[in-house]
Amino acid sequence: MSKIRFEWSIESQQIDRVDGEDPLIKRRRRRNLLRFALLLAMLVAMIALGVLIVRQRLIDVENQFAQLLQDTVKAEVAALRIGDINSWLASQDAKDESWIAQQRAAFHQYNELKAAGDIQLTGDILAVHIDSQFARVLVQENISGQPYSRLWFYRRTDAGWLHTAPDPTFWGEQLRYEGAGVRINYRAADQRFAVALGMALEDWIQRACAIFACGDLPLLVVEARLDSAQKVAWRDERNLRLDVSSPYLDIARADAPFDGVYQRNVSQLLAERLVNAHTNYRTAAYPHDAHFLRQAAADWLAAWLIQMERSDSLMGTLANNYGADAVAQLLDSLGATDSMAILQRMIPDPLAQADLNWRDFIEWRLELEAELIAARAEEQWLRLYDTSGEGARRAAYARFNQSAPEPAYQVIDQFLWTSDAGRPQLRVSVKAGEAGQPQEEIVLFNLVNGVWKRSN
Image (cartoon, rainbow, N blue to C red; front, side):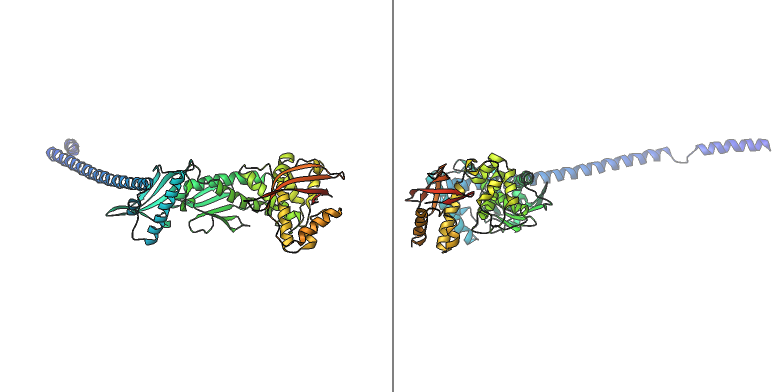
């Protein structure tokens, strides 16, 4: 029995070592798998090559369209440069009759600028964006030695690219600039403008709030719009919602699309809003000096934000001599009917020795006098005069009773001295009358209880 068991064990081990498959069949199967993998790799490579060929062909076609577009732009600029109106109009979209009329007028405007030597048509293309049948191109032209850019729009036809009217639907995707206390919502074509605007607003808010108590200032949200009737306007002043018009609806500085005009407009609105918030929207009553002081403070802040401080203004010299905080302190104390005497409480020096420039205040006073005379507001008008002398009173009423309107005044210079009566007196040189034939006059003001009052 043991012998039989031993042989059976050996036989079973031999059977376990045999897998039962023909080696030839195994090799054939491996060759087939390798051949299939090779064919599959070749197929994938052919597909990839086909895709690359098609993609390259599309790129070539796009490059051809882009080159054709640039050639069209340069041909338009050349037509403007040589004064060929037929070639200029041939590049325009003739289906839009109003656009043809606009471009005809634009051609004549270019001719006038060329005749005056104020424009250089460089034909430089600053940016191109093509999307299927439509395109926009940023084209540079130099006006009075400064680089400007216009956004031109095009439609591709069988005859080539045609210049079309500005297309709000092709201003690019909606984008957003996020900054400290500022958000700008804009379209892609306005990116350079929006970024410059956002950076400026961040700086302005930070600097202004270091002087004026801004409190919990809301996030300033600006919408760069294509349908705004004004370049800059509040949609909601208290909640800081501002609308600005895209500069590329007309023309923009190529190097600084948020240029001086936009900066002055935006800084003025922001300054007035910050002054309103600082004073809790307290009003200043016309025709009191407080009305001038409040607006003068806002005007100073607007100029200070864009670093264009005026040394020929009252607030400018107040800030220069006593610090910008003096303007904020003045607003803190300013009541609705305060006179100019409030300034004496803001500064340590006697008012007549404070080295302040009174030109803009005097201009406002002379304009106010003409308004009160026209309104026959005798009581308010008389407060503008030092009537302690009979001669000054007679001269004042002669002016009040004359039938001719008061002339417009422009202050040229001021000189502070002491009058014969021993009082501080401001001698102001002014131009009066029409711009073509102005008459130079001397107007005198006496300092009466901290207020300059006219004395001649």
